Length: 311
Image 1 (cartoon, rainbow, N blue to C red):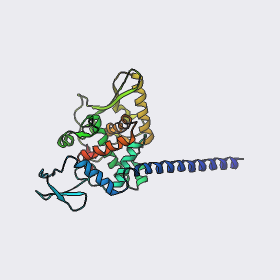
Image 2 (cartoon, rainbow, N blue to C red):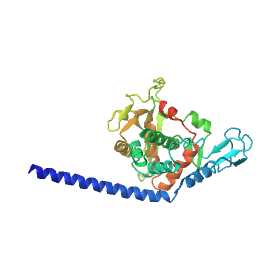
Image 3 (cartoon, rainbow, N blue to C red):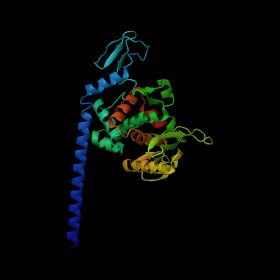
Image 4 (tube, one colour):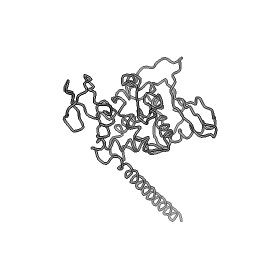
């Protein structure tokens, strides 16, 4: 009798596993088909970067020259004044990629289209890259999404993405990632209780002195398991005209973060919340938020791995 019960459980579990795998493969294939409508090859990706980066004309990053000629490759431009050869990815968050540009665009598409997001472990398994490389690139995508929260990068009335000077962006690019910063959620609705805007911002308490940089990577006190609640001490609620909606929105965001990620760092909490808020503010148009994210990554200056991890 016991043997019979055990076999039934085993058969049920195996069939359930097969069903889940089948559903996942169908969803991924559908998303791949939708992505292929925009970008099919590396050539299409580089063409988009060239149009986005040099839409207002070429300007040399070294001398400021405005007259280019043909570079080493078709997606490069060489300054005729100083001879500097510049690629379409130079000075952007796509600079020095360790995998093909088409794969990077697919990761951006997954992070912007999936309502629950993707963890670095999921990206590592699906795209066959190391978990550390997946985390680094995902963190850069979050950096671009977080700029919309601080209005360093914003969308104009004509739909184009604008930014302040790159010097200003580079100087303040990781202020929200300081250890003593707390992430705050603002939530506003109209008279019909429909969401007008939700905003993620960061505050720094006055009574806490700036902390020193961590030499050996993440601190154990900051790097928490996502299923726990210790990291929530850095996540508070702020201004609102609808308290119930604010609490529901916060609980939903926390639920999605816990469901997707294995670990979460308190000092990078601002960018995890910005990622989910970015998708919420552009919930009606997945194509729009995908192109917004790509445009922001082109405008934003390149961030080395040590800078992202150390601050």
